[in-house]
Each structure stands twice: as C-alpha cells, then as structure tokens.
Image (cartoon, rainbow, N blue to C red; front, side, top):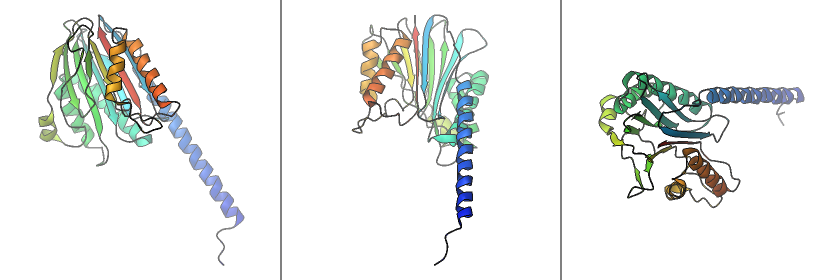
Length: 269
C-alpha cells in the first residue's frame, strides 16, 4: 500500500495552507480598508438634504458610489454602480468603475457621454462573465433639473407625498457596462430628464436591497421598499434610509445579507 505522505510532508502542507489563508485574510483586510477610504465624505448640496449608506455583505464590496460637486459650483454629479460577483476580483473592478465614472463625470457631465466613455474604458478589461450596472445623474442644484442615465441599474425612485401619484420610477434605459462596446452601447442609452420640486425625494439603490431573501427564501422586493419610502417619505433622507435599513434587518431576522447594499437619498428643501 502506497504511503500518502510522511508526517513532515503533511505538517509542511498544513503550514503552507495556513500561510496561504493568512495572506488571503490580510489581502481582504487591506482591500476592505482601501474601499472605506474610497467612500464619499460628508458632502453638502445647498438647498438639498442628502444621506447615504453602504452595507457590504463581505469584507470587500462590489458596490460603488460617489457624489461629486462640479467646478461651476451649482452642478452635482451622482453615480452608483454594482459589479457582478463578490470578493477581491469584484472589489478591483469596483475601484476601476468608480475611477472611470469619476473621471468622465468631470470631463463630459452629460449622462449618456459619461456612461459611454466609462463603458468603452471598462469593456477593455472586464471578462465575459463580469459586468457592472451603473447609474449617473447630473443635478443643477439651482433649478432642480435632473438628467439621468442608466446602464442596467435598478430604476431610481422619485417620491413626494404631495404628488399624484406619490412615487414614480425614472425611466432611463441602457445596457449594463462592459457587455457591449462602441455604437451598440451608445444606441441602447435613453436619458431621462425631470425637475425636482421642493419636497421631491430622489432615491438610488443597488439590487442587494430588493433581492435580500429571508429564511423562507422570500425576497424583500420593490413593493416593500416603496411601502417604506411612502410611510417615511415626509421625513429627512437620513430617517428614510434608517427606516429601510431597520426594515431589511428585521426582514432577515439575523440572516446575513446575500449581497452588498448601497442607498442614496436626496431631497430638495
């Protein structure tokens, strides 16, 4: 009978495995710290209340977002994205996506142009199994004009208890980032434009919120999200986000999130 390995061989193999796992843990810890440094700092938009939260399901996340005041002083770029998959690879692509969107937001501003240039950049590096959903919005804080471009990302919500109907989705259209290059992607884009009135809430989110599943495999869902927004929509953006986080945590009953969750709420005063 052949020996499967001597005791020293087994011990050496175990030691190598421990070192490998320690290196992975250290890499994840470093990536997690770097991701936290990339999160938006406290940002104020004159005439608006703003709140945001980022809830990673793992040590590192595939979600990214930013709120960028532009140089003219009254325009603000907002973007949010979600890389397919999890772990180190998703975190690396997250960094690429955030950097691309931030650079092109400052260079081009117009949503369709920002998304198209970001897509051309990312499509060169993403493999065939990886894609990024993204949404970019340009706000003129003085007039309330909001231009929205969407690349396969969940539709944002506009809510105002004084409106009829009280809420609506922003119907911008576009393919996900990284799946098609050049004219194919550009032709898929259809921007949406609207004007935020006083009291209007503009709400962005990643699908980790609505696709959270409880112990019975029931999804949190869009209907539940909209019910909570409607119930708390007259409150501040921070209170609305806090309510959503409480509700999804209660819905999960201690079960961990299966995907990253990012929420952004902007309300015109």
